[in-house]
Image 1: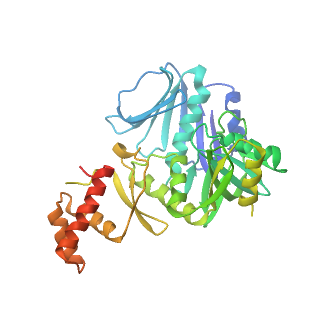
Image 2: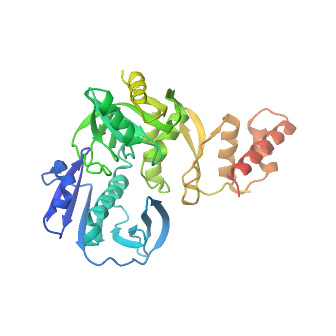
Image 3: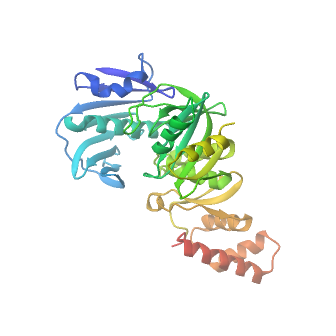
Length: 283
Length: 89
């Protein structure tokens, strides 16, 4: 059955032959009526076999592996593995609009989530939209993004705000979408939120972006220009060796570096860190 | 000499910089800030494709009012720096 979803006002469809879409409940808040889609994914449950393709790029994080490349006929291939086990094979047209995922039943959710994140990032990079790797909270109707390398404590810092800054709510804990519309910067929830089930179909104007690093003290300072740009790049997914996408992401990052309040917070995982951060960042 | 494939010149908040965006250099993880002369030489090197200190010095002398010795020394400094950063091949 084919269903339509709208994330940050971009529509995509998923046509799955796997019954009872309970395992796709993270997408329910984003379901929408049939609409013109930016891209479509067909999900097929079968034994996953390695495709014959030329590998371009390989990425490994916490035991999850993505290998990407292209076939002789110019289709794009993404293979997802956990440890040494292949759990999904995504093949899409050169323009990234039509894709098919063959996945193993035991890992279908992981395979579908990663396929849709890859497709979403590829299809929106030229549309003033970026899929961030960040934890984001909402406070007084503005969104605040926390960036940092894996293991820095983005989620921890977001939970410290929830604990010590009254009226703070988590918007997304892993992959929010940021979109520029008429010069305004909007932060949107998404169906992808890492280990925290927080799938909110809500959007807020950006209040600020905070890049985190661990330290034996708490200290915050504003970032400008190139320094601000530099913290955005590693937090945004994209295929930067594709010129159009690199151009789109660069324009996006440059706009944020010029217009958004961006900070660096050296911090401990404590109450003071959240309070110092809120005091400077919230206008 | 050649500029290594995958490095691109971009404007960030009014500054001219070099970024690694190609497949071979996508993990470069550095942003190289260029002053006006260095940015001009980068564009000239892109235009010449295969270049030498002599060729770039000559181009700089044609563009700017500068003594050939000064131009040569600037070009040398800039290329040495780029070589150390791995931007050349």
